[in-house]
Image: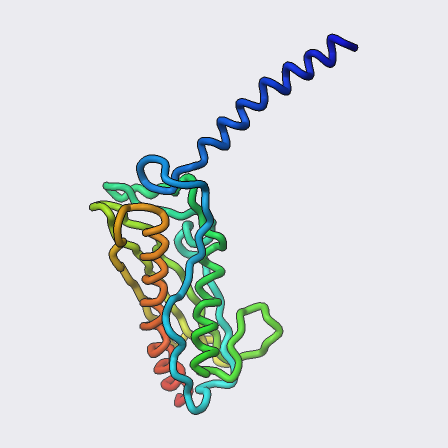
Length: 216
């Protein structure tokens, strides 16, 4: 029994330094070298609330995120190395998958604007004649030349569910510069500004598409 307890004590002493070493290694969020502890970042639309319409264009509108760039459906914060190869920041991640963030950010804009009487996500208990799908085609930090640029590309497609046909399609992109050093924090700031720029362009396009489709 004494030998068994002694072996357990020795094993416990051996494991502790391994855990300490592993935790101590989680400190880098930049492309080169340690800078701070592991962090999660939120992708945010920093734009102002749009002016509200006098009346909605349609009674209800549904939003649906579609599969696109693999990086959009993971928590990995991705950057492109020189030559175009993609890699993930090892110690910096999204707090939520971008594929879930995008439709909710647009929903908030549309609700503030009053574009539709009700704006909901597909799957919510809401009936609607109109559906807007959103595909993130590109989402990463293009790090070369340093500090690089954020790259976001989104395709929006508007469907008339009554006629079961697509009535409008448009691609949007933004590439704001990364400010300061090539770090995860700076990349997230630039990617958030890209989100705002894309939504700024998407809202008037969507309203024009709904107005045109509603006259058919």
